[in-house]
Length: 183
Image (cartoon, rainbow, N blue to C red; front, side, top):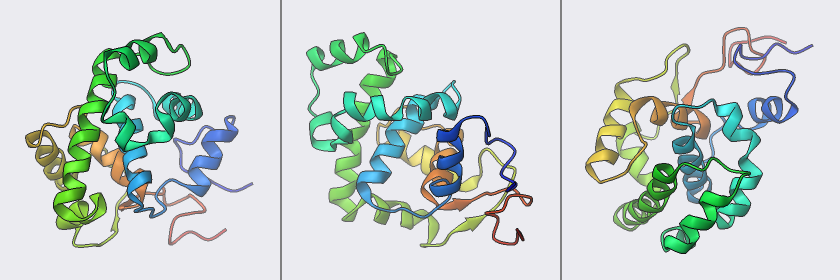
């Protein structure tokens, strides 16, 4: 049996698949970067497993994470989302997702892509580190996003986000996916 990161719930096939096939794997497509930013913001105060288990329902509820549609959500759409029992129904987080979509689009316009924006902090390098929940990098990006008006983008959320999209590589030393691990 393959060894995985300690946090991976082996009883949840969806979580194992996420760990094995997605987490810490570089994916710098702006559509994916936006989806993960929205999902990570909904994680605030909850477990990633909770959000991941609702991911498909979030995709349906949030128009497949279409940034143009989300940035135009109105009060009627917010009411629909608040009534959707299959997603996390937090009014502040729902409003933040709309707000953050607008700012994400501004960053895309300013930098050519959201990934280009992120690269201004990372010098286009992957960071290898284990056992952290935040860092100087996540502090800096979080502070900048907050200055630009984003919500639910604290340093811990941004650190998780950077791990999820593959900018920070954090597989445990014992994990079969660790760059130095042997299986």
